[in-house]
Every structure is written in C-alpha cells, then in structure tokens.
Amino acid sequence: MSDDPRPIEVSVRDQSTSGEVVGLEFTPFRVRLIAACEGAFARLEAKSGPTHNIFAETGEVLFWLYAISNFDGDPPTIAPSFRWARDNYGHGNLLHELHYTDRGAMLPFVLGKTRLGALPVHCWIAVNVVRPGVRERHPERLAAYNRFIAGQPVITTLRAEFTRVICGDPLPAGYADFEGMTAKDFDP
Image (cartoon, rainbow, N blue to C red; front, side):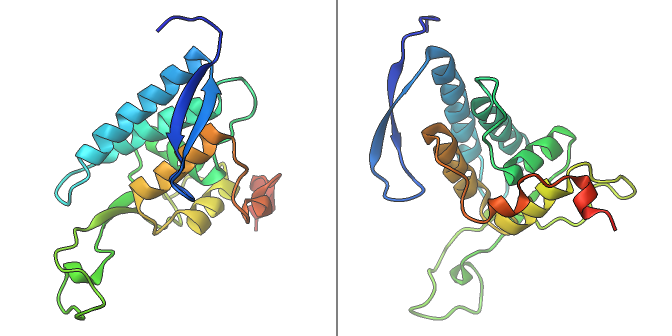
C-alpha cells in the first residue's frame, strides 16, 4: 500500500446497530491501522474457544484499536473503559475469564428458554484492584470499565467499539459522567 494521501473508500458493516454496510473514506495510513486491527480480530476470533487463552490476542486488538483512535494526534477517541483495559493489558493484567452466558450450555436447562450446546464465551471481569498496594492512576477509567464493559463478552464489545471509533460516532450515553474526572475526584 502506498503512502498516497488521497482518501480510500472502505466499506464497514455497522455491527452496533442495523448491520448495514457503511462507506467511509480514510487515508492509506489509517487503512493500514484498520487492516492490522481486523487481522488481530481474526486471530482473536479463531482462538476464542472455551479451552483457549486469548490474552495476547485481546491485547493486540486493544492496542490497534487505540492506535486507530489516536492516529491523527488528537486526544484518543477510544472509550475510557477500553483505554483502561488497553493500559492494563500492556502491564500484563488479565481482564477476562471464561463464562457460560447461555444456560443452555449447562445443566439444569429449561426447554424452550435455552439453547442446547451453547459454548461459553470470554467476558470482561469486574475489577476493584488490579495490583494490590498500587494506587490506580486513572480511577475514572476504571469506573467506566466496570460500568460499561465488565461482565460483557470480550469480542462483542471490542467489535462495537471498533465500529464506533472508525465511524467517528460519539461515546454512548453515560460516558459524560466520567468526562473531566481525575484521580483527585476519587480520593477519599
């Protein structure tokens, strides 16, 4: 891919709402970042079965997602919850575990209300303290993480954030509660 600054049209499937295909224009540099993130998603989705550790693949998606959100030098547009997750993956902290999200995957099940054979998925864990004895530098991001993505499926939430970031959509309602907050707002 050349470094020609002319925009390239890219088709993106809006997975957060209607599922329709949206045409967007990006510079070749941003297209490379998006392609790298899509490659990371492919590796994550290929390895996300119940017996696999997805730590490295999840961290890779988070890093590319941050790069896409920060590519033009403005403050990053990645949601504070995902920025917190990305920062903590960079320090080696595991923030997901395997969950059975559909009762059809376990006994007892209720006929007509559950799917038989549903596979477990990796979900973000709720976090109070990541590193005991270490003061959290961004408690507002941790609070956003716990409020918006803890307990949710990893791949689903990452895909929704990826779509939001590349489409330039605003943060979901509720994130405004955390804007402008600093560690001082969380001091006892």
